[in-house]
Image (cartoon, rainbow, N blue to C red):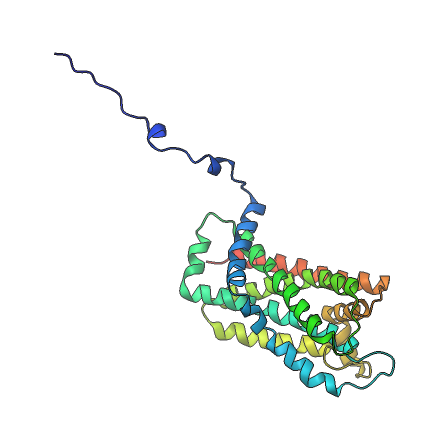
Length: 272
């Protein structure tokens, strides 16, 4: 009697290869996209969270708008609303690090650091998330104020959002860098965040004009990039497209975006 011995399946035959994994795009852009999708899922699942973030800007509109002086030519909302949109972008982006601070405390951030995803992609993907709340919040503000003597110039509003995107991403990246530096001490994050944000808002003339401010205060305002961004936002929301203001305002926004990403990526690379 003869015994036939047949060879068993090779490892490649025993475990089918998922061809989709072989063709899956790899690289920095793919990592950024994966992180961005991960960060956007909570917003897509709970869009009401974005609306809850609108409470403060709408309160400012409701309380400050009636106190604005009548210009006689156009509604005071035409001057006030662009500042509120810029303020919303600043406040929302500056809170980005709060989510990262929670991840650091819970330990989930440590698991992300040891994952195959590039650390720079972690930072950039998280910062790019701020584009979505910016668009949604601007849309809500415009819809709310348009029935109240606000002259809507849709082209100017859309271009204004484009100008704000680099600024919002840069502030978000700086907020993430602050959370990484603060580590598990959340109180450090909130102390620095609150200390920096409100002077930026006041010096930019978001709530009150600073045309008659003392010289030293005016100089500080001129050094504030948000001042130039708010100036161009007010021109765009009014339907005007001044080339010089556009160049200065978008340049200031782009500078904040680049500095924020550079600082954020450096902080993320050094995180332990």
